[in-house]
Length: 99
Image (cartoon, one colour):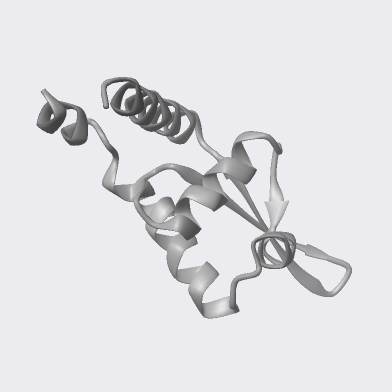
């Protein structure tokens, strides 16, 4: 029974950084790279690696634009990402209830 519950966990969200990124994006329409970096206290490289993994999974969308002459990259949770994250949280809650 517990093994079945563990199988429902989404491996994309096992990392603390990815769990944090998705948590923040679930309650914000979008955030810039710098805002995420500051809020989550991650290095550029660490944040970029986790954002890329979430993007490749289809869980976040990336919007690149220029503000004046400065590049600005923002991230938002996709509908698929929101559903996957909600499913993951539900699996965690179910796991805890059955302990």
